[in-house]
Amino acid sequence: DRLGLLADVVGAPAGLGLDVLEARAFTRDDGTVLDWFVVRTRKTASLPSKDQVIERVEAAGRGVADVEVQVRRQEQRWDERPGAEVRLIEPLVVIEQDSGSARIEVEGRDGPGVLYRLLRVLADARLDVTAARVATLGPQVRDVFFVSGTDIDQDTLAKKLRTVVNGD
Image (cartoon, rainbow, N blue to C red):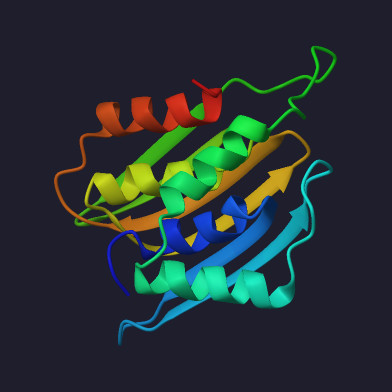
C-alpha cells in the first residue's frame, strides 16, 4: 500500500474510457491491498483488451503511469453528460471523524474520472483510504471512504469533494 495507490489504480481504467460502476477496497493490517472493481465501457469509447487493462492497472499500481494525463484526456472527450430531464441530487458530503480515522460519504454527479478525482483529493489531504464502498447509480455516485489520518480540516475537505461531484 502507499498514499494515493487507490486513486492511481482507479484512474487507470478511467483513463482507458471505462467507468467504474462499483468498487470495494480494503487494506489489511499487513499493508496488503485488496481492490475489486466492476467497470463498463462508455458508448463513445472503444473496448480495451483485458491485457491493456491489466497492463495499465499494474503500471498505475507501480506508480509509473501518468494517470492524471490519461484521465484528463477522457474527461475532455466525454459527451454523455446527463440532459436537463435527469434529476441530479445536490452534492452531499458527510464527514464523521473519530480519533485518527473518519468515514466520508459523498453523493453527487458522476462523470469520467470522478472517483479518481475524489480519491486524489483524499490523497492530497494525506488521508490513507483503508476501505471504500463505491456505487454509481445512473448519473449519480454514492461513495463511502474510510480513511486514517490526523488533522482533517472537515470544511476544506468537504468543499473540495463537493467541487469534484459538482463537475466544477
